Length: 551
Image (tube, rainbow, N blue to C red; front, side):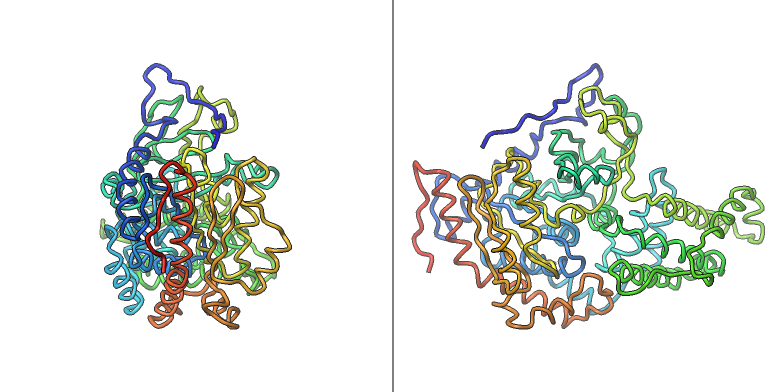
């Protein structure tokens, strides 16, 4: 598979190695992983002298994707298949599940038990979530993504992980777990994506690096968010925690205008109705209010309810402008005058700063703001990439709802892709979109016929195997299919709608979804083994792979 030319980063005097186009750490980790894959293949009774590169992809789909992806990973582990995987890649809700695999050191039993525990107790640490949001608002690059991550995604998943991507290095570098890739896109490049499906739109995160694969331009994950200029590190910022990254990876509504109305609406209630006092004295009440309004907002974005309006019938937000202007003009001493408790004074000040910044971000519609590590970098020929001080990163599902573009990079040389689609709608939209993307950029991908995809989507089976003359073999697994759901696919989709409240996910609802996802893996194990054997023999013909028995 021929590597396409990419812009190169030119080294300059005092240039920091934090910005680079090589991915030596990933290459070393993948090489170590090969030994584990060979052992796993042998246990599966597939003999091979070289390990084929297998990638597992998880699509977006909110909490449904999160739970179903956990079910897939759990069953793949149980069946001995996960150990034969080199790459794990996800979009949106699947990233929440994949990241959990690493924070739990690959212990799927403990991870599944923890999931059930969280949804049995229906608990959410609202006070801590609000505290983290207010703390994030003190950052110069605070955006709606921070609010979304700490106040919405943490509510949905019942988690508030404080670990970091770099904490995943140990098992990855030892090769004991697959190499994870988490997808996002550059929202400022959306016009280029819509017009020409520009590869530069895609942005990836791994335990070692983050950056633009199409440019071959990356920064160390520990420097994501730090300030660079002309390839030099200007200011170091702490590595962002997993809670924030999950919010960024799962920020599909960052491109939905109606969410703006709800954010304004909730800020009005937090301030003009005196609810900031609850934030100071009772964070739980305020947090519940925030989340309830955001979930109503999600419903509006799907057309289930009209966006909120003021009494006059049109959204009016002059109240916010006036409030912010008055607050800015008022001295800090006067702002805090009614309160004598110094600690309470600081809390009020931070809270109002959070309200102010959230309102400004909502008015500008800012999501995923971070420093551009390529700013004024002379080694990047693309001036659009190097002229911007900031990047605005959002959910990759706004481009393609599964991370095919990241694993189809020729540098990763993937032979077999297991694509798990957790969509509630057409489970072949991701295949259709990826085929179009690959056709435009001459990337090897199985040819698909529109008429055939339309036919399949009417009554999807549990597994489809797509093969082309070159490129990887693709196995596509729709979550809701006639093999597992019979004639009740629509009922299953309704039960697990993307924008369902987390509170509606009772333990029995969670267990049923886990079981369905596991069944799809278990029922297709023979097909997966057969394709594993085939790709091992296809890519290493001199000592082709041998199978003792697949029955």
